[in-house]
Image (cartoon, rainbow, N blue to C red; front, side, top):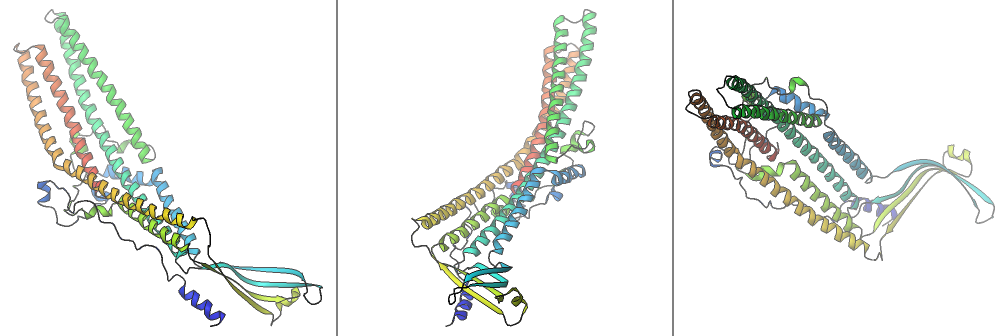
Length: 462
């Protein structure tokens, strides 16, 4: 077999051998079914429900505009997008290594003649291929596969960042709505206590009320004003946090304010119900789980790269073009020449470096497996927590509404009894405090129920 035939055979064999382990998705260390509440499981499909996109999940037009602004302006998400672009560029570099690099050049050389001893000149013009590695054992192919997996890792990271951003913006907007509701309660409480203080002053001036009653009314007004100031500060802090997520100032028309009805921010169809199926395999499509799996793919490819280092690396160098002893000969026919050479290199003694690199690659693969299993388990835990709150928060919200209705009625009856002299000032104050606490608890419970729904949306991969 001649030289040309050997080269052709080598080219045909290039890339035919892959020393990387075959990727197999590890068995998910979680139950096959999600722990759905009984009332949800009764109507849930047997398979995995298709996750909602954020546009279907967010039903408030104002909130949808804010989420869209955040997706366009948030700097963390912008970095995640740029990471994808960088990984794609690195993949292009890895793919380019599979093909030869062809250059064009003009060279001039002077050397003594082997026969006459006189200096002779040689001019060469043409194309050259320098040290093109034939991928006999899949080293370059595995480097490309690792780069491809890294692209998918960064893309999954971008999706994960987008999902986290949507959840954070929705939760932040709902928190602002709760702040507005709590401020509304505080404003009403302050107005009521100021009216009571005026009445107590009139009673005190007329000698119908004691100094203790007057001081108590003044203390309650100061307490209500203090709570109002704290809530305003908290609202400003929440607004600043939301502005950071959005990537700029939040337009006033998109901020739920005190003029918004209390139920419209949290209760009136702001968020769509999250569809849930019985099968837990839906969690395998979460961006963070995909990210962990692609990291495992890259780790397997790196084992192939480390194994290929034990075998010879074959490189070709060649050139073709015009050759002559004078520069003018380069433009004449009949002076075409070509060269082709091959070089095979293999390590004979490397002090165990190749074996150590292979051990590192194998351990990295084992770490990637453990990280994948941990990602799946974390996804299951987050989903289970959100599902546990799916019905319990609703039950707690119903109970809280009943408690508020009862507190209102108690406050009304106590006020009547106080007016008729059948109840003490202490009874009246206790009833007012209970009513205030019930109103605040209802707002906070409504917020918690909606935030839990946001958590379920994120847990199922959005």
